[in-house]
Length: 215
Length: 242
Image 1: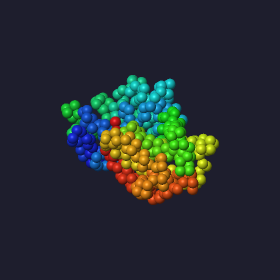
Image 2: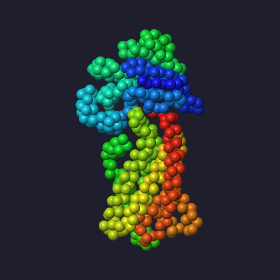
Image 3: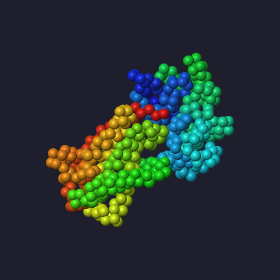
Image 4: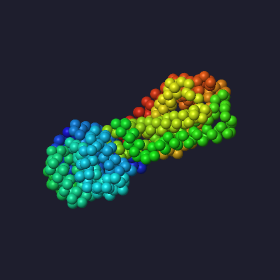
């Protein structure tokens, strides 16, 4: 279970502050697939970062009773100057896993081959997404936080993610921030529409998508 | 987990040995220059040994402090993993610098002992104790500087000049007993000087007149650490990670 209790987040902007989230409440139960919808800058990424514990809310609390992945987005969570293997070793260590298992899975899933011996900063965004996905799938979290990364991969990668995430791990919770109505409709049971710092949860995804497209 | 970070920084830095070589070069060359300027001995101790023993802790302090500037932003991508706390960064950086400096110290001491320029440490306990005090105070200072540098750009600019100006107050190049009584009183309150005096006693023993009071660095470290920890806590809430 993940509880967001009355969370607010503001960032300094010029002389004032920009209120990104304002008193938002959200509960995600195990196995639930929640989509985040909202226009650019509505706070989707911010909310994901708060749930993942990367940043802390200005006020309010986030409680996590299940293991939550780090936010899978573009760069975050990697050390760019290290190679793919080094990052895998690092992740294996801090999450207390056997490096060998992680390495085998990563090699198999990413199909990056020798590129894994290169620093991550030389990777394209698609390659990064592959690595990030591979690592978080290898760790086995109860809840995955995904910030639009699926979009950058090619068809083969989509298929793999689909299989690993929705077929093999269909019982896990998932939070997906995306602009793509198709993705949300296909994968989410519920959707949260973010607008003006407030979030409204809809148990009917199509209704949420209608509201979102009307914003 | 902290150890994991150490290995990690070790890997990142291919030439880990540079951590040791840099203070080594500094201390060695400065020691040699002073030797030619002032002759082989001063106040009854070898000048090369004296300078080397003073300069290595000083470079450690300077590196540790400079490296703690913006340390949280620099390591932002690691913050994606909740196991990693911001204090780990400060702690690990200080530890690495300290290891490098101590390796340099051991290296230069063995070399100089072989050349008969450096005494065999008279009191190893005092030497290590002095190092620990020095490290403790540097660490607690970094705990303050690291969060401060995240909010203030000015600090970053002021840092080099401050570390330079404080050299006379660091005890690196003189003993308290060589100073005038007024200056002695003043120096008493410098935690660096207290730690250095203890270190020097550990090296030279009774051949020098070392005066130290461990309560000064201990109290100073405690105070700084408490302030620093509180500031780190504050800054964690405000940190913006890309």
